Length: 162
Image 1 (tube, one colour):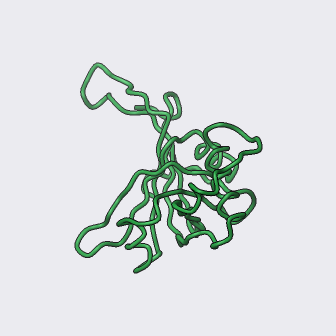
Image 2 (image 1 turned 180 degrees about the vertical axis):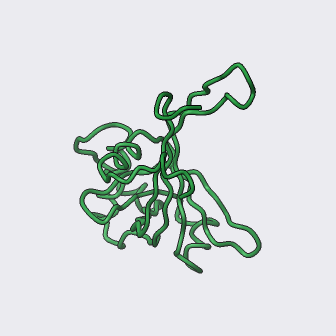
Image 3 (image 1 turned 90 degrees about the vertical axis):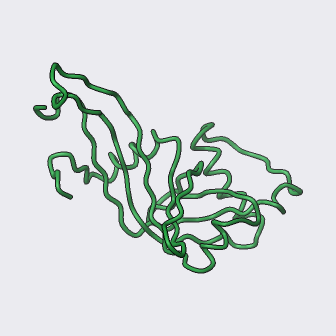
């Protein structure tokens, strides 16, 4: 990372940043260009860091994942424009997390799908018991991203001189 002064290495701080983000962008290997898709997500419990997503039972991301399940991801939040008297004094506050890992469907067992979906729901609606419609689960795929590497950085006003 070029700007070591903005690097975040503390695992709890990185998890806190992830918890604040509303969307995770996942990049897949496609033929000529990467294919990037924004997804709602949930955070697994424990280690290694695991992210959960849901999608329809067919589509481009599933096709690409079946060909190559190595993906990269990016999420960012806490944006705030900080203006200065000169153009070069203007900056953007932010927090961002990037990484890569292996993406795979949760096992065919309904229980594992429900656990992944519960992690997605918990991210947006809090920890509580969730019930899922079995008929809808038949048309839903829950994806699990086991994160291999993660980097994070942030810029907050006052952290450094502009």
